[in-house]
Length: 253
Image (cartoon, rainbow, N blue to C red; front, side, top):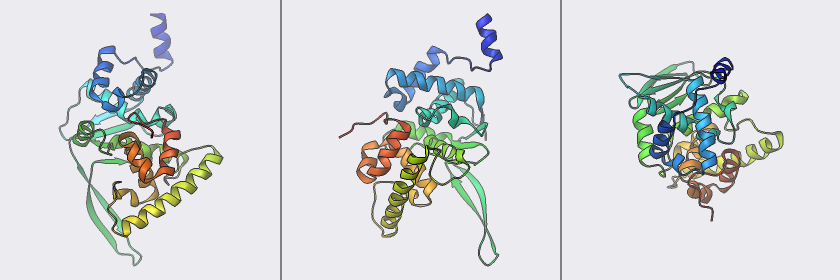
């Protein structure tokens, strides 16, 4: 009882029940592929996530405790090396049942405002919530090696924003930051050129939208198709392997 009181007073998260964690390991191929020590680390991070974040299903969606734990584990995959610092700066995960619409506006150089609707499967507000489509999370789980993981993508944006600038470079030691920025910029520019030339690339062309999207898309491939990422973008793959740790699906040549 005394240890429980100390834990509650200190704000420590309640532990994840064994049965729930076993179900999560069985449900998520990425987690199942981790070694025992990494699974333990992820379990601790997922408990912190559930303790610190409010998970809000909307539009009629209902999520049981195990679905919430699965979301927490997926969101914490990019934090296995980076740590709980990646959870700072925001407090809510909003989950839609499917893709959702957001209204966009932009004032062009002539002062004319343009408005349109975007249909999204995920979104990360710089100082606000992280938003996911549950249908697309489940689709990622069904095809874990297809190059997509929307939870990882949006968490990459959250990590990227921690230094105050959403630019595809997360907080890093100075020397590594310089090398990262140079390698990513060179790789991004070359990737954009190939997309604009109409080349059929095995990496999602959405990565050419902006440096921050390049980082987030490549993060998805690190976790879901690491060999492909190494083949197409070797410098980027090397940085991400150092930053995130080895991919659960990694099979180095």
